[in-house]
Length: 68
Image (cartoon, rainbow, N blue to C red; front, side):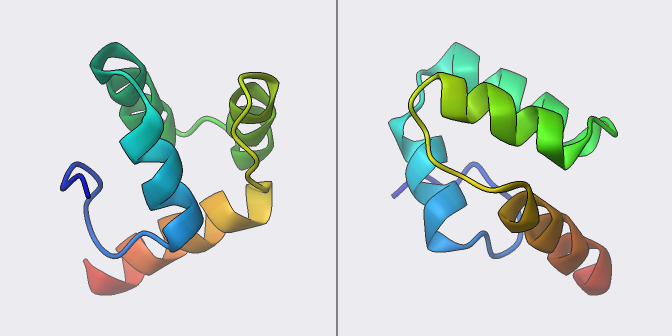
């Protein structure tokens, strides 16, 4: 398992992150933390074969805020 995502990502986000190439990981990390909408990020990931909901992304972001 990769250690790239901070905090405690759920299994879906961790699996997706682990499946990505390094350049894709960098892009996802940027989008997770740059204020991009969860809906937009989920749409892009789904278009590339990674099933994830915007709700999953929002939950992960909230968990990071709560632990900060």
